[in-house]
Image (cartoon, rainbow, N blue to C red; front, side, top):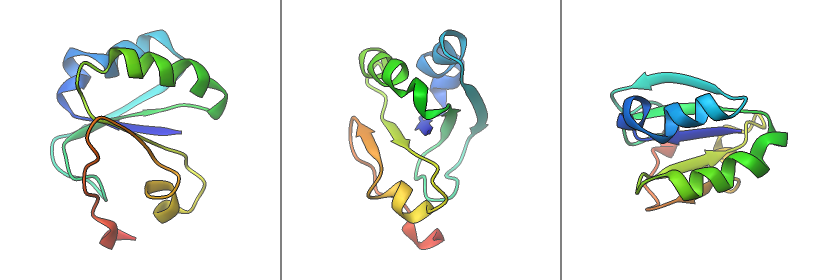
Amino acid sequence: MSISMPAPCRRHGPCEQAAQLFPLKMGRLHERPVGPHPDWSCQLAFEPQHLGAVLPWLALNRKGLVIFLHPDTGDDLLDHTEHAIWMGAIRPLNLSVF
């Protein structure tokens, strides 16, 4: 599973906190749009068996941040569209990269 969150959270909030609380990997800080993601972001990656713990924690601790959650099945287009979960405002993705 992969989560993208606005970049400022890496230094000041849920992204760093989640990395300390759960068995997940916090990715690089992207201070520009990357791939289909329209905003700056940081990534949290974790195994599907942790979804039941991570997802409710994010819902309660996102502090107004937009969170974009999707699996990594190997089909990037479907993972970023049909398989995606949004918390907060749904942002337009750049699907032309697929």
